[in-house]
Length: 472
Image (cartoon, rainbow, N blue to C red; front, side, top):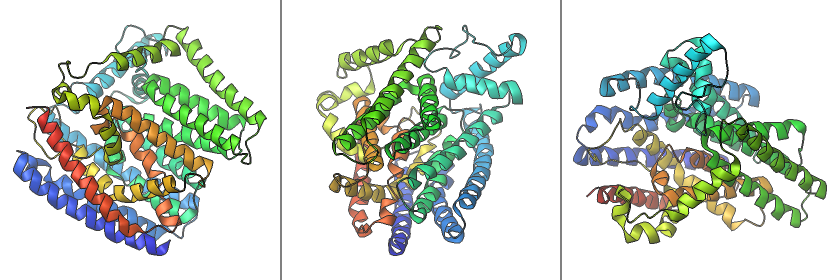
């Protein structure tokens, strides 16, 4: 494992430096005003250095101390990022928000809800945007923060930073159910210093909390697969799945489906910890979750589960991409028959843009963050193919992660635009990172990573070309 770590360290630096240089040149040629954000292109190299240096200098610490120090260090970085991004957004957008859309609306809805609570007490508010419905979870949590700590935007950003610290904690606990201490420590350092998590912790967006719910649910599912069927585990899963209803309920189906498939495969293989009694418990878990959903719908806060999934399925089946007025409709034939291509390419997506398309609503904050991901991605793909090659031998928890990743990517590929978006793909991206410890724990030839880096780079170029074509 030690040799693989140093191979990884050497290659990930090479990939990041090469990517930064190429992006710098391409942005100079194709993107007017790139110099405004040229400083951010070099951040991935520093963050990779911080992650690997932190592991090397702190690796002898006990697990609890290691994770605690990692969380504190990265939390301080997030606080700095909050201040920096707030000032950048004020300068370029004249408001401390990415645009006048999601984060702007979330904040003002939360303020309105909190002001009602100040006079009437904490209760369900029905006449304010996002106060009820399937996207009401984040504004109401934000309203709670504003109610207790004030109306500053920084309150909500710091809440996201705290939530992302819990992501680090539960991601580590999840990996430790499957991998040894050293490989898990390396990977969690790479996750914790990832610019995507740091950047999204600086914005007033729901995606960090949704990622937390996803990771905690996966942790609970793996605990069950390993035979730990306790009241606490089931409660943890139910609470997080219920929270997802109010954030992005579409995320629930891939998680549940992957868990059921994994459980049935393991049961019929006669693996230990899989009994008829445990199947009854799993059935109860599913039954209890949908009963909770239906109960909440009875309060007229949201629609029931059948209505939610039926309308979205019908919308997907009836969508005519080629005749739509969207930019994607300009792809015509490719937009219809290209799904298998997008599905295959989804392993390498999302990726960064270097083009200036002239209609950007906000700063291109994800470009430098995705450079970090591009440098690590070849090793994740090596781990992914290792799992596929040994699919009959891997333990149930690892199979669960692979299936969740596949189902997430299928869902993203059907919408295509989500597949390209760093924000929409955040859950799938960090599920991928949960298998990275394979590269450090098992005998894998990491030198093969170069071929996947080359493919990822070609996909990046094609992605930019595609985004340009659909706007011609």
